[in-house]
Image (cartoon, rainbow, N blue to C red; front, top):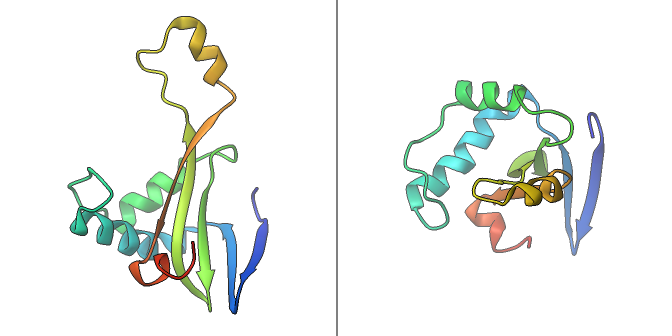
Length: 116
């Protein structure tokens, strides 16, 4: 997906989904840390830093990218894909999961109510 941009429109709102760039780490942190502080939808307890998120984003491959959502030029959400967790799965089940991925997405509180 490297370099691909996907515009999307719902009602009067235009959303652009694109690959995250290192410069997006601060916005990703802001959104993720809001969720950590609110403790509504995560078990995470430690706030993230832009440097830590940049390093994490750089470690991601094209098969499991980090994406951001922009509305009016502002990053309002982000998400990523990750290999499926196979801990505790029977040996034969690991092969079945090898071609699947889990996903996670986070939105700013203001946008989560209007863009779903």
